[in-house]
Length: 154
Image 1 (spheres, one colour):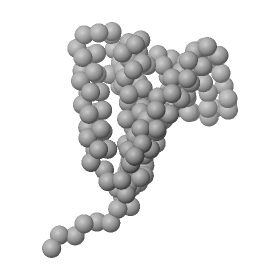
Image 2 (image 1 turned 90 degrees about the vertical axis):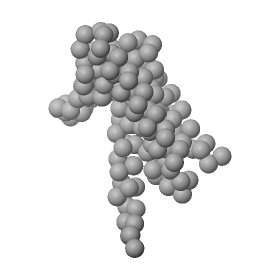
Image 3 (image 1 turned 180 degrees about the vertical axis):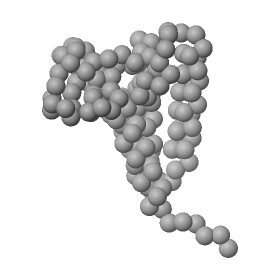
């Protein structure tokens, strides 16, 4: 039961991300300004990683490298989450958000060979819900680690 919460978070991130990408493609399919100069919906397709890092031609060494890095990252996040004590719910939630985001974008890449992005905040790179969940998760983990009392050696 103690791992049910993180699994629910992962499932919610996967579901919300894929629903939002489907909606972005079907509803506006281009550019829609929500708050001028601050927030817009801009549909793009990303073959690279977070923030379009590693984007380049289809297939080849670049695609293999992305899959190897993705596999290692998801594996490491799962290992860290599994080793996190249940008494650290903020950290567990953070890892769950990161795993959900990584899995969702990985699923996109496996099914379509690309990731759908559509959230643009000012001059920042265009993101999707999975990216936002990943970043929120990272912030939760970092905040929880920084709040933890320092261990003193004797």
